[in-house]
Image (cartoon, rainbow, N blue to C red; front, side, top):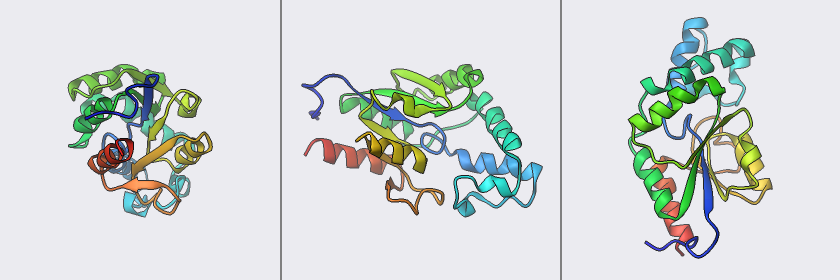
Length: 188
């Protein structure tokens, strides 16, 4: 399949990890529920900062960091590898980017290798948007990241979740649908 990018400079896609390449929310819920049993399930997370009613920010981000440090223990969405292969087939370099501490880098790299997920670069920081001057596509679940990408004129896509569905975002049921959209959009 020919890519519209083939005769242009190398293009880059920024692909999120949590709730994009794997089902992070159920595990986060499980861990938070151990701390406060009244934490609602992910289908009730209608705000990005839902946790503030149940745990402190310090506890919340501590739980996330512990999950990230054990990333290599978890699976991926069934279509994650095919999705990334499809992104590469469209002529895009893959930058895996995640809001996470650098202390999770080794576990993240082991996870990517364990699941044979293709990528060209790994960017771990608390601000993925610093890459927006050098990417042409963003796949992420965060409404904030989508809005920031749009302000840069970058195509932003994601999987639909309760916390992002009430925004004006281009969302899909899964990675396969995102890839089909890109194949149709970029080759038309």
